Length: 281
Length: 252
Image (cartoon, rainbow over all chains, first blue to last red; front, side, top):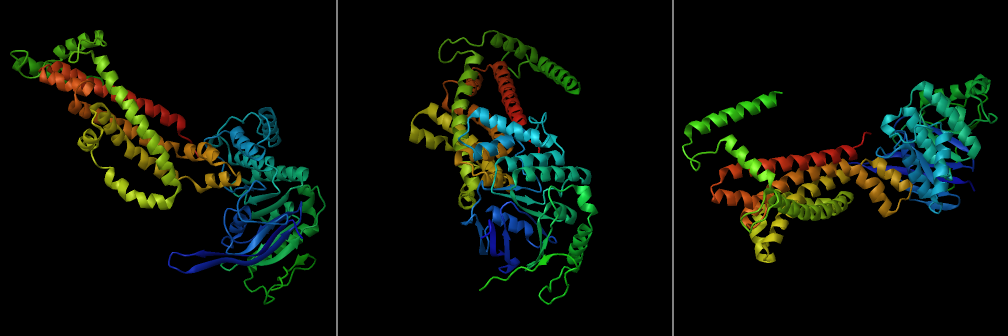
């Protein structure tokens, strides 16, 4: 049994006219403890919706989410989300934003312990000196550092990253990705990340789930990324395997095979591809 | 600079027109110098109390502000609590909104006869008029502000599993604070307008009663000074809430 199981999850939205729109269907994805799994797909394939379902912020139309042996359907401190738009509370300072989360997670701690812990995470993401600034006074990169600190500080069982670096300029993004890698290495969190950025997915993940485009998107294949850790960006990018995986995923997104089962695109040579197993009915 | 020039122009036109027409103190409007003299007299001794019909302007203002404080605070507490409930529950909001829309435009003074009949106390009735005048703008703004809170903020509070209490004070109220304070600011103005009229009706004490009493005494210079004072207090109240709005506003 895997740590986090997405079991045959479908999401259908009711439309205003009375019709319904199936965003994705029968997604089955198992994530082991400590694994970093990315999901890549075009806009509209419902990957952010799936992330929200795992977070408990939305309900699946069919199927279930099982975390650590228990089915979950409401939000909880065992799953923290890092949002694309940061979702910091703008009336609170950096310190207060993180403190709110830490206090919620560790209610039994005394003030001193809470304070030291919050400060430790502020230092970890390099925001010492800015802890009393409001989010509006920070750059996008700094805001997402707060978002990361808030999520990691809670020590969730699963970290959910919803296109976390999409709104951050390219140079800053590289730095924050490296910081995320360090934090992940230190904590060995289980991570599910949704992204558009193929290079980011390859650099960070153990496995990459590829979605066909919606509506009725499906999980088409899962690519294994078996680079040794800890990874160093420059070294990883020089590996021949890196180029092969990147080409394969780009090809996939370009073909965007709606007709996966028709055997449209054979896996590129040398890339470890696992077709998702259709669960026994 | 221009406003100062306009003031000088206005005062001189006023002074000239009253000079040429006024033959005695009871005929026509008093001149600005007469009003100024009376104002100085009242300001220099604002807190004397010589019986029911002769109190200093400070005492009368204090009575009015006291009523305002009681009625307005009660309205704020009721309206903000109810507004938060409505804002968080779209179905309740939908069900009650038609009533709010009908009740909102009613002049708060129109309730006066009902209050006098049911409460049988003119002082409390005046406070209830203040209550009614402040209730609707605060209620409508609070419900609107809370209903419009960004999904993101509520998501954060859901992920963190904040308690009901914490969610209210750490997320809902701060997020809706700008809208709530806007409602508070609108209604302190309308409440101050309403208290003058209510006091004219109930009599006894307060700046509204003072204006009416001085009119009965044909002391127009006192009336004009009192009118200016109500405007002055209104500006101060508004400034107070302007400052509050600034401290509670936030940039996304």
